[in-house]
Image (tube, rainbow, N blue to C red; front, top):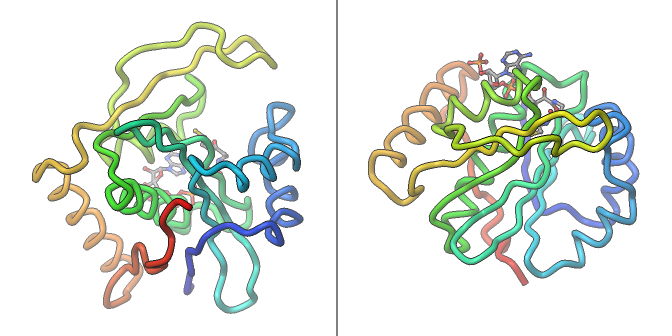
Length: 186
Ligand SMILES: CC(C)(COP(=O)(O)OP(=O)(O)OC[C@H]1O[C@@H](n2cnc3c(N)ncnc32)[C@H](O)[C@@H]1OP(=O)(O)O)[C@@H](O)C(=O)NCCC(=O)NCCS
């Protein structure tokens, strides 16, 4: 499977809005929220596109706040799950976060969301606390995950290793990351 990751554009929102309610249930974002995010100069959003059928199969984004990249969303279409799309999107986020000057990455994740937690732990995120009743739909707590300094050689080595493992698994010569060189915040 060939996946292209590029900047999210307004024309992506029909497909994004097909995935978001499935991925996040009643807590999902509105189309207006995505529109606002695409117009927000501090937001950096990406779409994963299946190169064969041009379908949008996942998306992610973060806010750059000082030296922190705060991941605000990451979701994969149910038909594309467990095929490393989420992993590729996270790798892309990390690369872009480095590129735009972040030193740490953070996010909130539901305590019950084991799949997402495993993905983040795989890439060196650690739980540094809990936000009680953070999710208003069911009063669920959020774990607050953080990376170490993403510029640190130890973190960069972990990233390199994971990218190499992914490339071997996907039987591709390399995993293309940050291919969109223009993708810097406006
Ligand atoms: C979380 C999510 C983005 C993962 O996407 P995905 O493309 O299926 O994940 P990948 O195939 O790239 O998996 C990468 C790693 O994530 C973890 N993972 C993914 N799905 C998992 C599952 N169902 N159970 C356990 N671990 C899982 C594993 O560590 C996996 O690595 P492995 O293949 O070596 O075991 C996807 O399940 C999703 O969209 N969920 C709904 C939205 C959501 O919860 N987003 C996160 C908000 S914080």
